[in-house]
Image 1: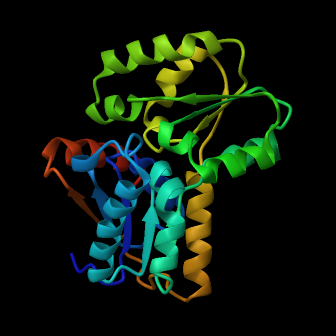
Image 2: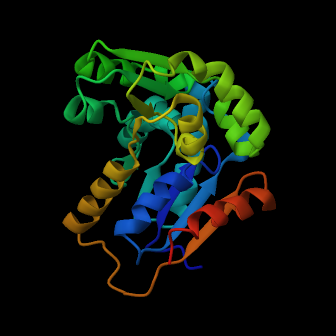
Amino acid sequence: MNSNNSIGIFDSGIGGATVLKEILKILPHENYIYYSDSKNNPYGDKADEEIFKICDNIIKRFIEQKCKAIVIACNTASAKAAKLLREKYAQQIIIAIEPAYKMVHDFAYEKTTLVMATKGTIESEKFHKLYEKYDNHKTYLLACKGLADIVEEGNEEKIEKYLKENLSEYKGKVENIVLGCTHYPLIQNQIKNIIGEVKFFNGAPNLAKHLKEVLEERSLLNKEKDIGKIYFIDSSNSELKEKRFFEFINKYKK
């Protein structure tokens, strides 16, 4: 695929497919390069400097491929590296996922909320600023150490065991759940099975709208009306990751 004029998207694995799904709903005619960095997964437990270095290398790769916009579809990478990357590549469009905690403030402020995210996201300065600004004083923060790994692996038994051990105490206590890692919407139904009926929030729909607005402002939307192409790269060259990625995406790309 000719990468020129494409949109580059990256995540620490296939979790960013949940972001691409939302983008495809409103930008179906664009071409996409999706980079699944499973070799360095998980980002959540890495030092800030290492996360920046990893992301910097991926951004350079997308720039070499002349991507017109780059989407950071990983909450940890966004929280730890987006600001510095935007400063370093000021001429490049870089759109980053944001934890959806502000959405709780806007739409469900009075409801008790559970924020599920990686340790890296929850401990980041960026998230703390967001949390302090919009805190409804009815919020639990849960650093889900290792959950993104298990979702990436796709082992249903491990996922169920993890969720039972870590979420059961919140059953009947929370009405909102913020999915603060792009992997977590992949297991939304399993989460609901443990916790019961709740309202889910994630940052992907807002990111998709923002991306479209930025491309429109700069007259960069693809004029062709053919359905766009998606090129998948995995840093571990995992065929299984590619298979699972397209199984998920093809449900939405008609």
